Amino acid sequence: MNAPANRSARAQLQRLKERNRPTVAFVLDGHPAEALAGDTVLTAVLTQTRQLRINEFSKQPRAGFCLMGACQDCWVRLADGKSLRACQTMIEPGMHICTQPAGSEGAA
Image 1 (cartoon, helix red, strand yellow):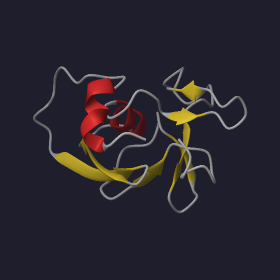
Image 2 (cartoon, rainbow, N blue to C red):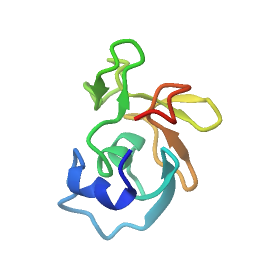
Image 3 (tube, one colour):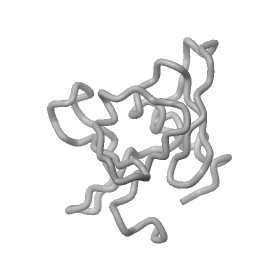
Image 4 (cartoon, rainbow, N blue to C red):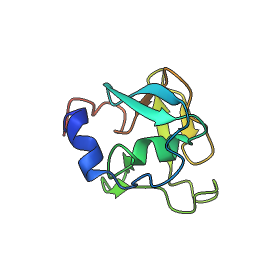
């Protein structure tokens, strides 16, 4: 995975408004990252990189689909193994988000 400095240049989402909210520090695939208070995990990740996760079956990149928790396309893991829907979960300080399938952290 590219270094954090390269992430914003290839982010899926570009923030245009509401940039004055407090920042929230989190960890994305082992790298420090920042989101804004009130962001969902989906927004926090996609303002850093182009994809939310790699599908464990098709191995294709995914970036969420319905954005309301119905499609099951936005599941990500926390470092403790807990899975969550990125489109319905608010980012919290110190979250460790893993976007790669379990066991593939060294790949890519």
